[in-house]
Amino acid sequence: MRNVLVSGAGVAGTALAHWLRHHGFSVTVLERAPGPRQGGQAVDVRGVALDVVDRMGLGERVRAARTRMRGMSVLDGEGNELFRSEEYALSSGRLDGEDVELLREDLVALLHETTADQVEHVYGDSVTTLREEEHGVRVELEHGGFRTFDLVIGADGAHSAVRRLAFGPEERFGRHLGQYLAIFPTANFLDLDRWQLWFQDQAAGTGGAIYPVRDNGELRVTLGFASEPLAYDHRDVAWQKRVVAERLAGLGWQTPALLAAMAEAEHFYFDAMAQIRMDRWSTGRVALVGDAGYCASPLSGQGTSLALVGAYVLAEELGRAGVDHPTAFAAYERRMRPFVELNQALATENPVGPPAEESVDRAKHAISLDEPAL
View 1: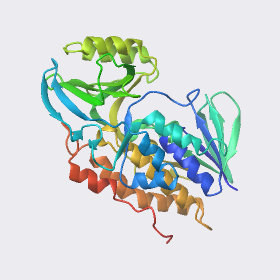
View 2 (view 1 turned 180 degrees about the vertical axis):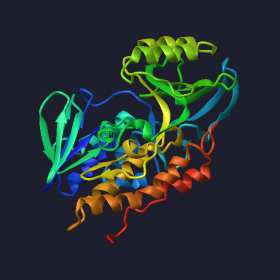
View 3 (view 1 turned 180 degrees about the horizontal axis):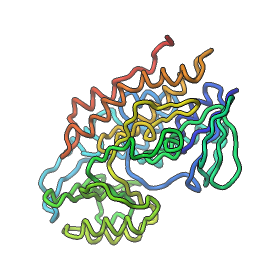
View 4 (view 1 turned 135 degrees about the horizontal axis):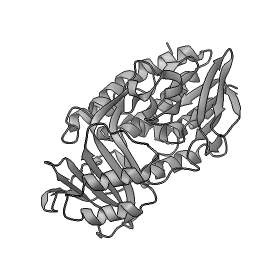
């Protein structure tokens, strides 16, 4: 039984742990956070990714956890309604479609249940050094000690430590998309009932989105602004909140109240809208999956689906009888790359709005889960 280290306990890492265990691997999941991450936005599971969760036995529960919006309104920077729809939502597409929108933390919790008793989980630590040896990879950890694994898979997000250690600095692979987003939860002080609000000041390049979750008991808030790349510490939350407040200070309507809620928010996410583009996703005994290798950005609406499908395909190729890891990694890249490229293109085809519906429909089905071995 080969042993694999999966760095990152998000969607990609947790789904990969499930499928590797399914194929008979011994799996350790390493996560820098002290426990499962909370907060974040609603995410979409679309197309072939729904087939993946069905094959995990989670389809019914994933669909039951969907957000179930009634519609949305688009407002200007002062809160005046410009447009409304009861058929479509910017975050998830058609409300009567098969695609599923649910909270990221709910999806990760469901995925985790499939591995909890079969996979070793190590929280509060991270990889600091990777050294490939003849029969494995020696992994040194931030809090001391080392372990050796047959394979190491980076599923640790767009700012992947595994990618940096194995492939080089993030600057080689990141493509900035001109925006920054902040996401946090707060009380439903607007009394929204399954209704999204999107507001924007196009001239200033600022705006946001608000939608209720947890049976309308809570709001998830996204605030954003256009900007060239900013130099900052990804762990300096105080600075991040301050820059968001400064950039959105000119917006009216409920923006002051939202900024006040942001200042008090315990769970807070801030990052650039960016993509990761690489010529290869593996080197030696190390490979990447999900955002670590091919982040499409939230602007694509397909990051979660790429993570789920990538995890399935990578594990399937590694699990083929008689196949060594270089062959498996090559097959994974051959199958996934066209799918990744189509989905990354969704984020850039229409910079001022959501991607075209026909482009999304084509991209979300552009791979087969049942490709036979060569």
